[in-house]
Length: 164
Image (tube, rainbow, N blue to C red; front, side):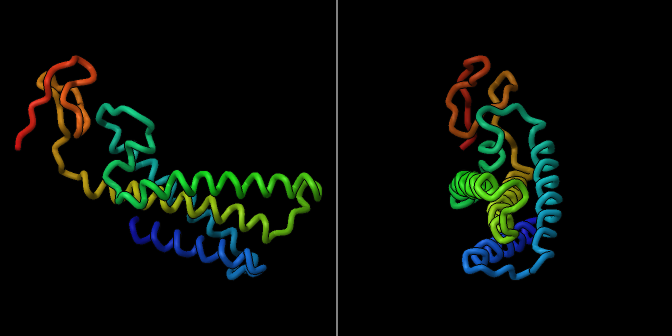
C-alpha cells in the first residue's frame, strides 16, 4: 500500500502540475485515477478500523497519522486546504459558465488536488500502521489507553509508569 500511495501521489501531482500548462498527460482517461484513489482511501479506512481497536483521543486523522513522518503530518492538512481551494475555484467556474460547462482541464485540476490529499493520507496511514505494528500501546495501571506523552491517565487520573 505504501508504494501504491506513493505512486498515486506522484501521478496525481504530475497531472495537477500539467493542468496549469493546459495539458492532460493521461488524456480523457485522467479520471481513472479517481478509482485508484477511492480504492486506496478504502484501504486507509480499513487501517483506521484496525488501529481503532484501542481507545484514542483527538481528531481521528491526527491519531491515525501519529507515527507517520513529520512531513506527511504537515502535508495532509496543507493538501486539505489546497484541495478545498481548488474545488471552490471549480465551483466558481461552474457558476460563471453554467453547470457542466467548466473545461475538463479545470475539473481534472480540482480532482487531482483531492487525489494528492487521499494518496498522502493513505501513505501516512500505512506508514503509521507499519511503525506501530507489534508495539505495545501505553496503558495506565488500571488498563486505560494513554498517549505516549501523558504522565497521568486522562480517564482515571492514575500516574502512568513508564518502562525505561
